Image 1 (cartoon, chains in turn brown, yellow, purple, orange):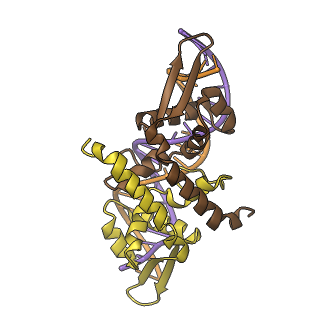
Image 2: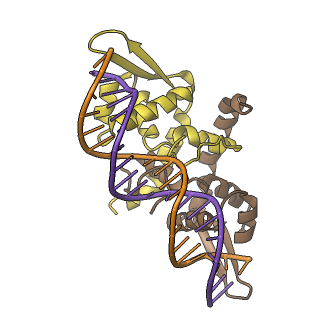
Image 3: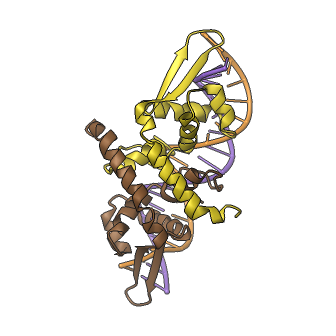
Length: 113
Length: 113
DNA sequence: CGGAATCCAGTTCGATACTG
DNA sequence: CAGTATCGAACTGGATTCCG
């Protein structure tokens, strides 16, 4: 089921539930791409080098069902699917930013190990 | 590292690295306990109902090696080991709090699944 | 009391192949 | 282009046992 760090049960703690939403292996990276605007599947796939199609699809589906990502399908050939953030997804921005700043401030010395 | 949802490689993105630090299955819960002050191993074990000794030890060791938890061993019988937050661990508090607020504000309607 | 070691089931993930 | 299906390998976490 879930790819999360956290198990599949709904956590009782708000912090844990938030972590379930953003804690997936690729989710913060997908969020970062989508903070930059609407992206097609292929764009995300190329931007997140290393992710497989399977994982990208899986993570996007979870984010969609969590209500933070919107999936727009264009019925045409070749297919075109666009992903964007919902308002709920946008509301995560301050959290991601504070995590970004903490990472920069406290972990960057260790990068070159 | 963790099941941490995140793989064992050091991430290139500060947000991901931060997530590696707090993203473990039980880490935010352990942090919450330790925000309340120094705790013994047994106290943590009882507070986090459901966690196994193995997992508690494992998560604490990772947090220690990430520099956010301090482990103080008292050489006596019976053994006594106390865990506390380092200043780096304390510095995570704003992030955890913003996650807490986001969880309350945006996810609480769903709690009663 | 606070672990370490072992074993094992379940889950996750990557690679690959196929499709509308 | 944007997926789905399938198959193993690897990793994870739980239960249990033993130890200083």
